[in-house]
Image (tube, rainbow, N blue to C red):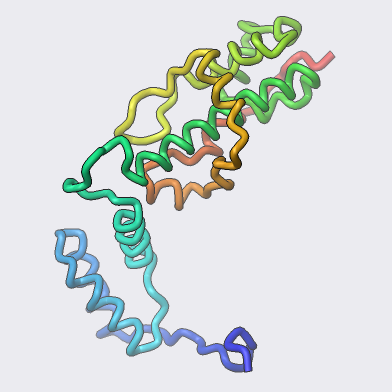
Length: 209
């Protein structure tokens, strides 16, 4: 019998007044830095068949990520920490995505919505015309423009990158690119939601003729 079969699934119980109060107390204690509060909340949910509240899930995600990615002061060689390596890979993937989007726009201007937001705004203002992007070098330049004033991590530097840096990012062929990362998971690793860097959520009137 498979555990995934519907008739063996256990429906989470509705927390009673006491459980609600305890979970609230555990949350306050956890936010104040008490690590035992997390364990007590997990035990409470397990023993009473309760769904874990979102705050507890988020705490566990961050705790697990910090452990596996070596986010601790005693780690030697800060530049080689797994967390730093993942951030670098994330940066390269954002660079690649920007260049690929601008290249697609150069061939078909109806594909402008995949470009970095700054590129779309510049095109809409007519600061950078579609016909000015005729080759890969110009595409790299426009992609660099779109990435120069963004931060990929809250405590990191601006992602200013030259066409040379973008060219190197495009030359990576060893399948080290990260899969699509949701905003919630990105935030666990201290990164910006990549989808917020591309596209524009207000109506535009680009010249598509």
